[in-house]
Length: 376
Image (cartoon, rainbow, N blue to C red; front, side):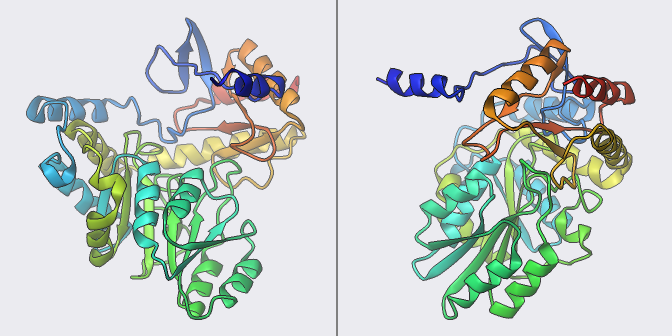
């Protein structure tokens, strides 16, 4: 039924294959029996296999069992779910927070819930696919503004003077590693009476001493700002969250379809997220190490003549010029024992190798990558 469509993908080198690992997540992984130094995960702080998360998850599994058995609204949650939500609200400086089953379901559910027939959404053109899908599922008109272009955003806001407005942006853009101009966006939201919805999936645990994009810019929370994020990246666990006013969260509980109609996350997953959050709050050394590694790699790539395209974070794209070049480079790196796969359309407009460095990488890991890319 899909053979013709698959053939077209193969013809233009856009067919994808799943490569599952046979090892824990970390700076070294095993795929099909071969070990790689990997620069592809979003496990920025190296917490995914940390013993403290594993042990807390095991304790919770012993206490609560494994499966949740029902949605949150039908007793699928545990007492740990509410505890995590209180801690996340405190962490983000908001009145309340709500756990979702993934970052994707958080965006799809929350944006769908926030959007109404008289709402206009203003979305950065490079926002994550889950934001795009959330906008599509809402009942709201959506205006896409040019990437990080606040002059274009202001022009768009001026066109809708009487509508209920929500500006939506990633904090850290997942494919380019750049940071949204949040201070300017906050200023525009104040001036035009707009709400602000920020996806901090790649910011939480990474920038602002781990607390996200608002502390990064020395900004505090506001009642008209909604923060979304994940536990599955720097926090090494799984799931998503939305944080905001108590009223916003109560509305999401009552209207977010991805929450209402999903079985709750198992308590053991929630316990791992709690352990990760406590580590980020109490230990800044991992974040410091992450940024030392990021600066070392960024300097090395720049010195080798690579354009890292304005990356400001541990996400560092290497532009390669074409789909064919990207596949060739990714293949060469695999031959050298380095896992940094090709990123191709439709995930991005322009193919690239997307490198992510973590706190768990050693100097030797980074030097190995730099030596390999210098030979390309």
